[in-house]
Image (cartoon, rainbow, N blue to C red; front, side):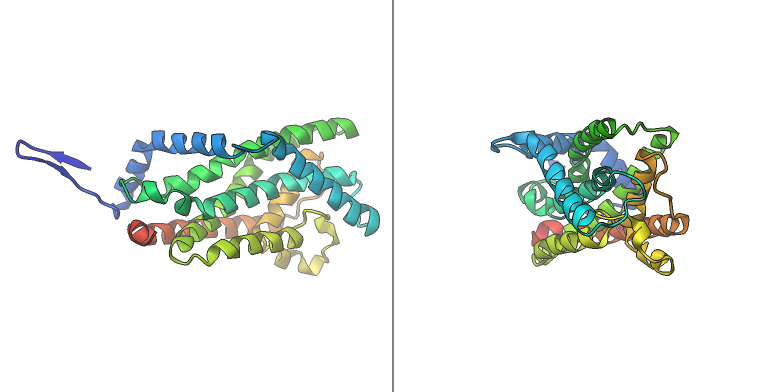
Length: 279
């Protein structure tokens, strides 16, 4: 905030603004937010040989590997859906979650020079990195449409629920991302924790298999993984209801995701005032 009078020009840096003023500042700095989003998109594949094609190659290779291992070798059930479709529908939310969490957790460290020079709501940095991850998501969604046409699956009315399930995967990505981004500034060990969490999460989430293989008595406990219910939601929305929704698990996953987001906001705001000092 700048205070000007006849005597001097005084710069006041206020990192611990009251909540209402803070969110007004977030809106006031919206141009910076969109600038960071655009910058992240431009530099994501800068100086790579094949550029944005990585957004196509990575999910396709993963889909083939999971289909061979879980579908052809392990012969796990696919609920009557072609295994590549089952896998790719799950990879849409999982890849967005993994990319968003990875980018968000290191966003403050990557923008250290900006944070130490000027005041602005620091939450703009991690959230902008999550929004930029939507580019890969939409590229994969177009690829998913092509695979669905190949197998003769045309979406029905359920596809209208897709934005809702995208919102539901945004919640845990933002919540966990805010926790890890703030912790990563003070404890650099967390740059090793996040890849481990994502690698472990890939195998305990129903990406390469259908949730129906989980025994009924364990389904609610399995829903403690907030991504599990969202994956089933994407499959339900895209595959014409071929995969049933487990509503108790989806409700539990949504509640936990909201709790994670609220706690992430609380912790980030609590530590925000010291970020520039310790970064």
